[in-house]
Image (tube, rainbow, N blue to C red; front, side):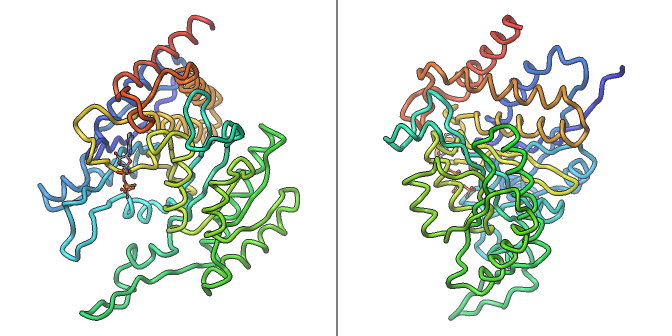
Length: 372
Ligand code: ATP
């Protein structure tokens, strides 16, 4: 049987993006060194806020073409606070990629890893295992994605056009119910969807809420409930272990995923996948962290776990169990690296940086090989 080759477009981007990407590729090479069924070929693609400052364009055409022809996109982080468009907004090309490749589901798993300290004292924090699904094609980011539709600002007022559509909401909720079903198959305690919205105040959210219940009725085997976003901010601090799959609007998902990451060791532990029906882009939930860039302090785990999500997605899309198994192996190696409780990223109050954490994950992979 010939080896299946996957082309991966690699966009390291700005700030800590290139540091965590280098660590991630090292770990992937270690993981797949003896892989007989498939291999990844990496194509380095420039882009980001610094690229915009230097060349006048955030994502060159060559990068877009590689993303289009790739089997998956690995993305570090883009955006730097001091580099802005003339209207004052930050250069965030990832928003354009989500639009161009219709990456409507921002899938953000939040899982306690044994040995990683939580901000919550309650021992049940060890049971946190939920997935936020951030809608990414519309919501309150709509005006930013489609500036031509936005009412113009003047000296006295500025607007942000929000949009909720039936199609955008139905595909988000269908994704959530599918994911809940998969999670229940792996763990019978899971399999519940909680819609997060603000249907008590905003018209668009009342529409979102109504469509949610219509889709819930088509998925009667999955438990469904609902929570307003302000209450969810509180509940994520009080009892996050009670939740499973949380679909929500674009802006709410942006905010809640940072909050939820804080519960399980910080942004450096929080992976994500931007998924559409055809394309998948995998990136940590965090940004370019300019405050720690260039110092070797960034935790690469979110990037590495995002690569594990990529392997899982490739495995499912191409019916390739070896890729799914590699994803699981990488997840186990991350767990094993942190299990002793001695590995502590800077965000956790420790001093272990990018290289130390990546090396610990590689060591854990090597130990697996010996055991196997
Ligand atoms: P964006 O809006 O672009 O998503 P952000 O506003 O969420 O970015 P980040 O760049 O993610 O900001 O950084 C927020 C804080 O988290 C910073 O103090 C940063 O140093 C820290 N941080 C983010 N990622 C990591 C990481 N991988 N390792 C350690 N600290 C991190």
